[in-house]
Length: 371
Image 1: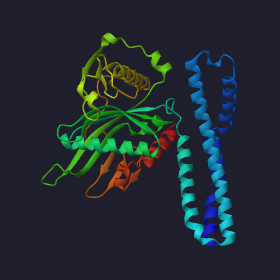
Image 2 (image 1 turned 90 degrees about the horizontal axis):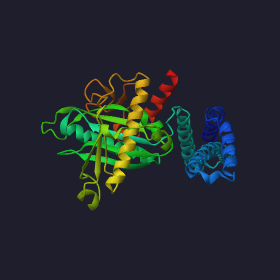
Image 3 (image 1 turned 30 degrees about the vertical axis):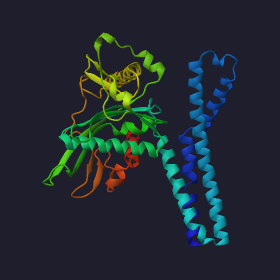
Image 4 (image 1 turned 60 degrees about the vertical axis):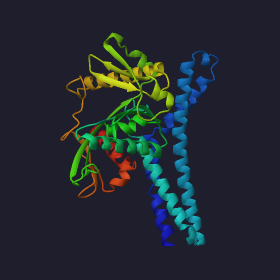
């Protein structure tokens, strides 16, 4: 039948891309690494250094997951070809909708795995600390920040990442002044580093009784969570750091809102400010704050070495007109456009519901081409 022949040809067109994907993911090399790590884990003194052993086990788990995911993709491809041939022989037209949907899911999985080949950065595999700040636009900008907060949460949920709110400062009338969250999962930073910059909104403001069109801005800062080894190498003179404690605001239980558990640290030499109110104790929030401060100072030092910033003090981004990386237009037409890559989506509602992979893939592909 013609329908099944078309599906078969479509599936067969993935034969070569799957081979190239195996090479790009270095599956053979990763398999050798797995064998080596498994042998090391059997050594008698393996657990003498618990931290080192746990780190090795985590790395081993990630490598195994990578190989298993690829092998599952190949197996699914073979199964779909077999099912297509069987359905065609039996002229089972009723199986066509299910087969078509499974082929679509297979293609989505191939694209997701292709995206992993673009994670070439040193810290791409790390968790990510994402911070949003409202910019020019007052209440409208704070509402825009809350929309971005929801967008990134929805994106993380779709990808199976976990999100932990670190700091949350509500706006006076509506929305969010600023917030920070930890996004945890494989390659979280690799995905989200594409979101660093200023995001611009154009819409009819719900806060304007005259129904006029408004432009608002919010910044998104993304830094990798550092592993213990890298964090320990970063030395901070605590006499250069001002530590403030205050009562948590926003979401939280009775305890978090009734005691001064929230912590804010200001690094005086650079003007970097970090805050955390996620934990129940002030000590835990201080520890998290210190990790965030080290991560920001590390990212700043890396950027300085690569001559990507001109001024290391204070806020690196001018959260206003002319500095945006992406525009989200709700009227007079709908369009989301990334100004770095030219990638566009006309379904703005889908983007706000977390459909960001097209933008991320375009950015990472461009970065790889430039290299």
